[in-house]
Length: 366
Ligand code: AOF
Ligand code: ZN
Image (cartoon, rainbow, N blue to C red; front, top):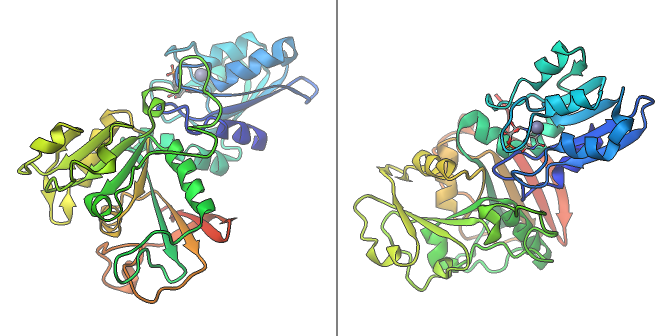
């Protein structure tokens, strides 16, 4: 199953709005006969890819799959039927499929006499598929908040300058994160201060090797959707985020004068809330557009509002071995007034990136 989880990860960045899925097929004597993963939405499911490689060797064998095999005919046929046809005797599943349209493969296989186990290495598989699982379970995109800061947690100096706190290696790593996202969100404060392009420019080109026939889907062909949260339509027409190199959506308040913006980007109107524009409505709008995973980048105020609303699912912090002592904190007010209100996270991963550290954490599951 660990190998299947590894295989699944190869689809990261190209399967959206579909899940990442990996599959390993063992022959009757326990040797690896086939491996597969889901490479792009609409393409063969992982099980089908692995069965294809295994051929006749699958008969009497075992399939390890990171997601419950589907039992529906969507863009492709049901994997439950494919596993039965191949003569698989046992199926081991990591995570049950929360998508009601496709679930049911485990029961179908059991009914046909196949031995089925579920929940094997579920935590690892959940982590690898967090975006899609969040999207299906909660009906909103999964939000990763990314920031870069000094060791004392500051993202800008006292005079507002902020480029560059982290190393080129860390910045390249951020481009990889961007390439895996369906949308990148920034507040107008960041647009005014840093004029970011918010495009994914990973070393070696977008997404690495091509996704195969059918393409990676509309989200990745021109890079992730760029989203600016801009209540009063203050984004200047010359902003790089409006350069047309990737689609851009600007969220403004109902009363904002967005005539200039409308010439250069798509504009959506969202209700005002005490903390800014309604972020749940923003995510609902993105969900309608089949955005599954978003990367929230800058600035501290917007990130604080997302946290206040309970809308941060993962935190990726890049910490530089540097100190400022003054300057804006990485995170703005999030409605936490006393220590009892601390938002507790748990670390998922800690990896050095060049001279910096990348810390990945997520809210403690309740
Ligand atoms: C995948 N890849 O490897 C597996 C999936 O859009 P469709 O017809 O390809 O069906 C997508 C659904 O199939 C998906 O939401 C999930 O519930 C199930 N399993 N999907 O894209 C795969 N095994
Ligand atoms: Zn399937």
